[in-house]
Image (cartoon, rainbow over all chains, first blue to last red; front, side):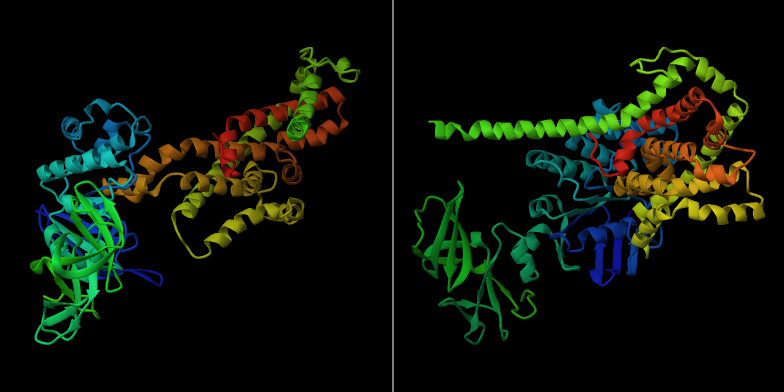
Length: 345
Length: 280
């Protein structure tokens, strides 16, 4: 049982505030992804949970123990590093056995666990090799096996796939998901890759500027961004935003069209590029660039002077300069507060 | 046609001249180092009569008379033994103090870190002759004069900057993540150092120790000033060889140079690393 609770954790590096009072609860056996651009504080948060950084304020709880004053070795965690951190002077076997030997497990148990995790990660034929004789992908497998062999309550992963090439990353992603689901540990996984986050996570915490902007299931984060930032960060291409002018009684003028919206003083209109379709009436989009991508066509256009993207069926002939009316799917329209940038429910 | 082809040989000529200059420069530098060494060994390994003769042979006659005489010379073995003792002690002192300082420089941020690094090198800018007299007075007062430990302390001071800088670059070359991984796998800071950092740094630390040994082995000024009875080989040779025949001087010189040469050759890779020359 290892529920993780982060209560009011903040971190300052000199004048720079890396984390502003973050609160987050991660359920037992949950796969939580911390997602954000570089410098958003996601790695700092992970390192605070690991005990490699001390928080300036706040508490970290793992299970029913407060751990923020404990060194990493007493926290019941295992960590996988971005650059693998496989010990170069030890064989693969001894690398995986390293933590088990520190825990003074009997030799039979060490051998059993090393063999089991090595088989799990498909590296049983590499046990006698040294790190220098392995490829990047194999090293990452060793690093994951070493963490799994500890049978920890919590596994922390700091961009574990970012040093691998694209094809290998895809393969490892699927494998990691299976292995970690089976191991029944709580996982916290840091990445800047939204596809990785969407595909792996039970829940995603989107971070920006030292805050957690939204922590929710991947589909929720995608469909119902809690803030303008989430909509503009997640999705490729990202969400479109257009200014809206109130017409009273929850009706809004957007680029010459009228939509039903929230009954508030000010709002911004938002729609995902794939939630648009050409229609007789819609937002008049002046096409600038057309990129046929096979299954669909990416159209970059301008609506009321604002950049606007749409993902359309590829069988329709569109060329730059065309003006096409694009109708949004009504229940996919989202509204944001133009001042706070928060979603309006 | 000729207009087109004319520039080509010119450029070739420039390139050839450049290459020639480059090679000549290298040749000169190599000779600068090798000729004295060759001279030393030819004379040390030749019969005493050949030493004073001219022209020199390219290859020595391997006559051991000079070396034998040197070895049996009153006090040589004792001075040699003293040299070894002082050098080993210097090695232990400078690594014992230098390696922790190098580790701290590479792993911790502390106020005055840059100043400390400069200070470490500054100790080498301080001329030893200026220091020698007050040091001698202080050593006599504290009873450290004419002892192996006293001299080793001075030599350690000379070797420490190198020990600190070599180990600093050594530890900096070992990723922090390796230590952090060890901490998450159950190690204390000290255990992680012993189990992960030390095995990786050991060859370099050994090299830095050998370098400290050589610095002490070659040092003559402090040794001559601070010892009387317990002379090291350098101080002993300086004192007695002034009044010795030429063959003996060459034999003594060769005996001094050989261990230093072998050791430096063995650890050259790490010395290059210290000076920031990319190796391999």
